[in-house]
Image (cartoon, rainbow, N blue to C red; front, side, top):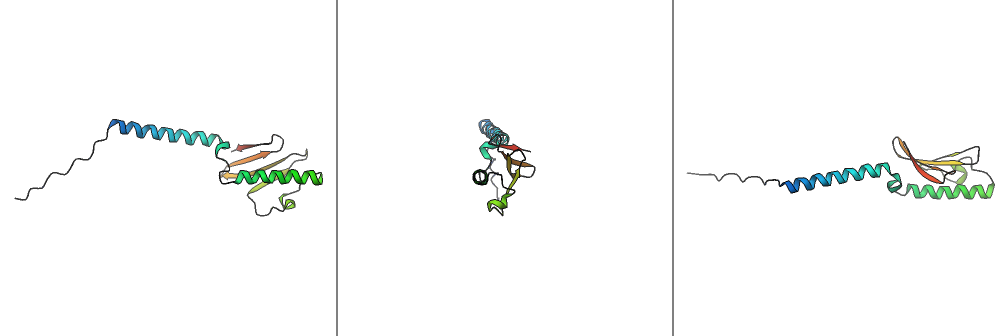
Length: 118
């Protein structure tokens, strides 16, 4: 007679393991939601916001030397760029770039801050 041994039982999940997995999932989800709503922690991780800051410095340097805002980024020698620039009649300006579809980071020279716009 050829008797086969019974198949081994799969390991039982302990309730401690299940709770640990649930807590890890909640913490990860919470961190994602928090960081998504606070772009100052994640914006420009690829250096885009830092490059935007350098662009703002170039705009201010241009204004100081020429006593006016540039008409466009081309006047600063910027050609292939992810940035958008708009000079305003009141002498202020806005620099922005797309973070992802439907979301941008915007620098306003009046507030001197980057903000998230959806």
